[in-house]
Amino acid sequence: MRQRGYCEDGLVARVAIELENCSYTYDGRVRALREVSCAIEAGSWVALVGQNGSGKSTLAKLCNGLLRPQQGRVRINGVDIRHRPVGSVAREVGYLFQNPDHQIFAPTVREEIAFGLRNLGFPSPEREQRLWSALEAFDLTAYADHPPAVLGFGLRRQVTVASLFAWGPPILILDEATQGLDWERSERLLDRLRERQDAGHTILFITHDMRLVAERASRVMVLHQGKLLAEGPVREILARPDLLARASVSPPPVTHLSQLLRPWGMKGESLTVEDFYCEYSALLAEREGV
Ligand SMILES: Nc1ncnc2c1ncn2[C@@H]1O[C@H](COP(=O)(O)OP(=O)(O)OP(=O)(O)O)[C@@H](O)[C@H]1O
Ligand SMILES: [Mg+2]
Image (cartoon, rainbow, N blue to C red; front, top):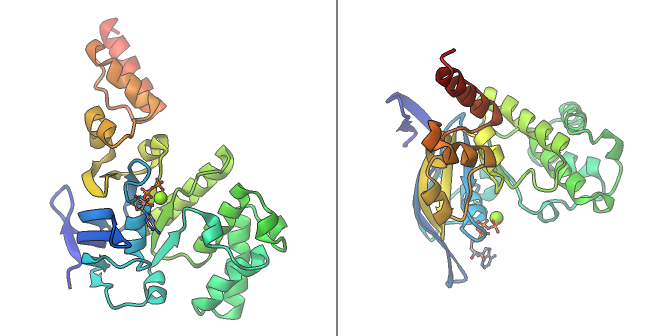
């Protein structure tokens, strides 16, 4: 059993998700993933980015057993999942589909969330408690008896998020979870995710929103045409505009601005507005001899 990897400071860390030389081809024609190897440390928040069609959703589906690699191995918490049924992998790895309509099928919001809990064997009183706290956490209580189909895209997305949070798998893979959410709902989801991470859960977060990557993730993986182009700490990867351009990804505007100001002494590594403000005001103070 391989359950350990090395983190940056040399200490041994537990690996939650490990892909070893994984390739996946659809219908024997479309090569969606090419020999991808990566290790995601338990308790980390890793962003997965790349242009449309680069293989992000395919990689996510390999991690929870929905797709099986034609070549390579996937290990979850050190265990090869090759022969494990999807239902068993799902106890450890929760996957939020990119399209909520691929996930929702129950006639009401309440039943949608309850279904997963029942399937996973939660006893009745605990099921009710988990159901109502998930509805409350995502501001869905008023919609409990609504058919998901009558809700807008953002609320349908929230229903799938609430289902996932209701049972709380230790590894969460979210495929463009904030797409279609307004700022408040998006922030609420990100804060709930941070709480899960603080409790030791692992988060693999697929997104096109580089501001979220900069503000929330600790590491980032960049996919390009099915290959892992780069992987590393967010600050390091976002400071490499050439690499990002190759993957059709652009850094957040504030990082770009700090890169443009390199000739004036900025390091070009600001990830957030607060980062930028601190570095820029320190630079001004230095110049003015304050
Ligand atoms: N079910 C499928 N059948 C055939 N080809 C597929 C299927 N799903 C994905 N593909 C192809 O595999 C490649 C990778 O697709 P994937 O959905 O993993 O990319 P992605 O990075 O998630 O893209 P996006 O950002 O648009 O969601 C693409 O060329 C896509 O067209
Ligand atoms: Mg996708």
